[in-house]
Length: 498
Image 1 (cartoon, rainbow, N blue to C red):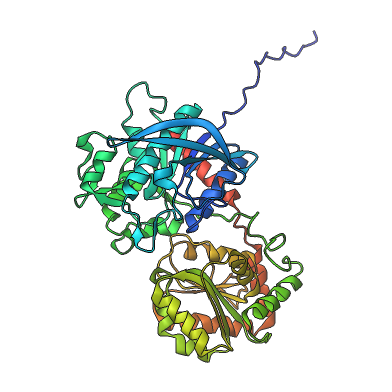
Image 2 (cartoon, rainbow, N blue to C red):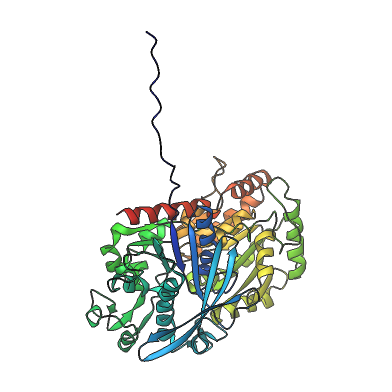
């Protein structure tokens, strides 16, 4: 008797995988406003998450310095109570790309100012009120949008109250039960305010304690987020370890150790639409690893702009940075005489502490044949230095992640860096024997170690075959947000499932 195959089982309609919903809130984001690396991350990670199949809504403040061209004023208006004051809140809408909307929250009294955080006199004295308002407004906006995220991703102290507020919502609140993730970009800035500022939050009085939002008699916003977030992400794996130590914990290491089981580190990525030598619109000449002729022309253009001679055998050492102690410039000052005795050209753009601004300005006067310095920030010049330099100098004492070392490698400019934070995670020390590595890494935060690393770079630059291989190694690295965004998505899923 002939056997017949059993009839196939009937299957119901295939259910598509649920798209992860993420609300991302930060105090700044490119291309709208930028004071530091946080803005680069906040402008790129949401796009990377969208590319990973997430539904992402981003929220930032609408400061007076933000150009409103391209923004659309929505019909969303609401009041936010901060202490005994009710603030009218307006909402504008923009976008990073077609899939990633950005909502900008505005109140004329609190945000219609030329700078995000302060002026020449220091931080604005009402920053507590400004950012408590912003924390409360973010959550109210999500309610009005009827966007209930699976993950609420907040960044640094400016959004430190959001995880606390989420954990203390009343029953029946639309956002009750939403999980939160905190990204720590730098523990050096903690959002510390007087005890009286707590009254502005509307939180239960019992939360103002050492086990809650208080630290050393102050309202501590970053500490609050560390304690109440469901997950914590430092901006590099090494930085996630470093912040558990007294040296780089800045007084929060004990709090972080309590949350160690939910702390991890992901290296930031690079927005390849903005930083890519093949298509960079700010460069006079584009180039790729297959054809580096454009890099040589960018070098010539940089030296022409700087008013310096184009000597092919003399490496151009570039610096694009905030000129502050954290970035290692005390070491540069200490060994400046020795550096100037080396056969190199130095080009610098940046702004920061007056003593470093004055140092580089005076160095330019002393050595006009070897040094160019522009005090201030110039985006076009920054891109030209990344492309036109031969070596990039970034000797940070500590560096949570850092992006300029990644930019330099993408542009074929090997960096000299100290082994800390994201610099350690992203730059591999050059090995002449193995022909591996992407830069010159030194360990000790001391000027002799920095000087030795620069000397190694100059020596390698003189060996054209070795240098060509080093440049190719740099440009072969993938620093796009693809991997980092996938890592964050996996972290979100782990938190949701826990």
